Amino acid sequence: MTIGIFLEHYDPFISGVITSVKTLRQELERRGHKVYIVAPKAGKFKDNDPHVIRIPSITTKYLENTTVGLPNPLTTHQLMKIRFDIIHAQEVFYTCQLGMVIARRQGIPFVQTYHTLWDRFIEQYNLDARVEAVGVISTGLSYPFLFGLSNTIKLFKKDVRYEGSSKHLPNMMWRHMLTMGRSADAVVVPSEHLAKALKVSGLQTSVKVIPNGLSLHKHEDYELLPAKSSDRLRILSVARHSPEKRVNVLIEALAKAHNLDAELILVGEGPTHSQLEELVSERKLGSKVRFMGNLSNAAVREIMRESDILCLASYNFDNQPMVIIEALEAGLPVVYCDPNLKEGLSASNSLLIDKEPDNFAAAYKKLAEPTLRKRMSTASKRLSKNYRIELLVDKVQSVYEQALKES
Image 1 (cartoon, rainbow, N blue to C red):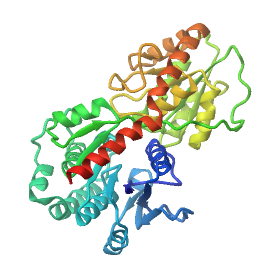
Image 2 (cartoon, rainbow, N blue to C red; image 1 turned 90 degrees about the horizontal axis):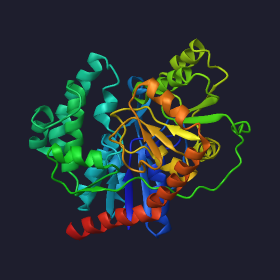
Image 3 (cartoon, rainbow, N blue to C red; image 1 turned 180 degrees about the horizontal axis):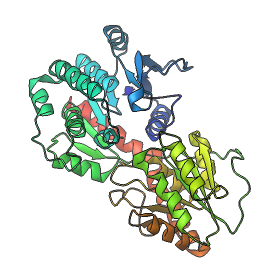
């Protein structure tokens, strides 16, 4: 098959979505398929890969300098020269809408995947009223041409069951996600809780739950951290430094874990980074917290090998974090507070706790006990076998084949 994977950001950015797409692409190509990546241009970054196709873009400061794809007739003409067998969109904005248009014009199946819960993401940002107005107006003008009058009415009409924010823009974003699902021949999601939410909201397109998969990691000697003391507990967080990830909770928990010999390793960057640094200073934790910045996926997986536990403080936000699946392979116990998260987690390898710092502090102390950590580590490694990329791409390939059969 010739497969077009469309997404809204790619190299040189670092994210779980990009890691997931690269892993999927690698396995599909290993099986003999030809895979094209279509994504917005990223500044002056140049690709050395003829199968990565860039479309014009702009950068918006309102969403952390995110690139936004701007499809045009020339882009469409270029892509129409490629005879795809199937288009697989990984997100829901302009680049992925272009993928939907290409699929329609070529008369081939269109598969939609949701990685980011965009309604919850956008709720974290107080957009300028003028920016919001321009977005709503431009969407209203383009929607009838892309999705038809019926879907345009549904976009602006609050007639679906929705358990998220009551704010207008997040609510509208959820309805747009549903529109992309209705426009697809099949929908793939990585988590059971998102599949349930889509069905509750009335999405009738076939929804298949296929978690993100994990490729085998080849050990590399990065030497990013000093040699670990056998007694000191090394707590790891791999997350964007932004409000919804609640990394501040992990820092507050360390301050509350009195008399615990532990250090907190923070991988990531983002808009709250300086606030986190100030919090570490205020709590006098400078000798116990390391800020590592953004790291490549390979480097993150090496740091996992040198850590003792992985902690996630996000609540009612994440879909299926790649970092959990990567932690399984490294044999890390996981501490988390969002009961929606299921994939890769069980009572044998993780602690589900309440979302307050005191509870994380108690979890730190509990997992300072080596025997318990070793038992949970064994369970994580055992569970990792369920997320081997070969097994999960078998399922993705079945979705493609079924969509082609029915088209």
